[in-house]
Length: 114
Image 1 (cartoon, one colour):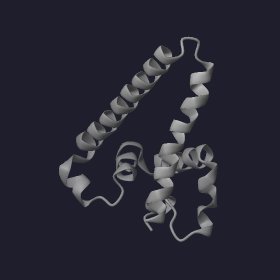
Image 2 (cartoon, rainbow, N blue to C red):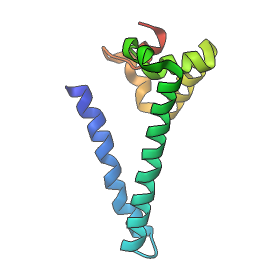
Image 3 (cartoon, rainbow, N blue to C red):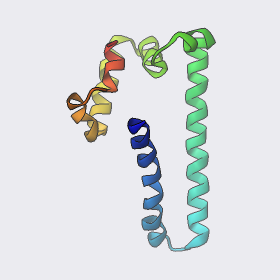
């Protein structure tokens, strides 16, 4: 439950940044609404495209038996070298995840097959 709450808090943290963005916009409310709607549309499109990739590459059966769908997708499309490359990119992009060796659960265990 605690791990789930961390991701929820990270999600809600983005709305805090909306206050800073609104102060920088020249057109105020109208520009903020446009920015929020456009960003939600882009995120939704990315989400749908990723899910279509899962379905196209792994199929329903592959998704049903997978413990880590994204890792399986990368393994199928980029091979084991791609898995290492994605792991390095995620590690560099998310500095707070570098501390995971101190906890019981680490997202990179999925990539290692642990």
